[in-house]
Length: 167
Image 1 (cartoon, rainbow, N blue to C red):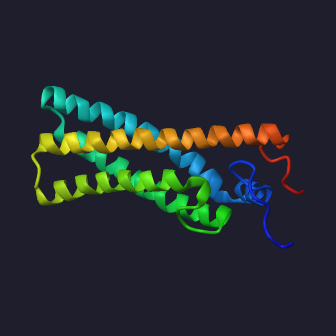
Image 2 (cartoon, rainbow, N blue to C red):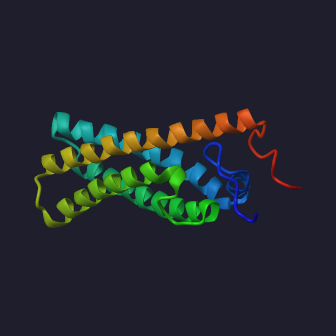
């Protein structure tokens, strides 16, 4: 039969090879920790503003940079899913992570809307950013759990990292 094997875990052997061979895996591997560092700086600046009332512009710029990273990682992640799983989003292996990613994007986008329209006060904007950040932390945790599952699957199958990639 020409059908792909059913995955016994996160990836079929073919998907694992595509994952290991695509440049989009490296790009995701670079962008994710960069986004997390931007998040940590931004979180500190937002909390500083909420605590002291100072640093609104710094906090605002940090949220804008964090949001740009989020959009970038979402677009490149969709491309990665297309290369590895054959569809841009909602591949079965990452369905719930993608669903929750849309909540994260919606909250960040709501912040942009609030900033652009002035619909919320600066303090309300910062609380909205914190809600977006809380959703981001949950979503990042989902992805970390998937990475761990993939590592455990590779160890169980005796295919650590890229052993199965043909020379």
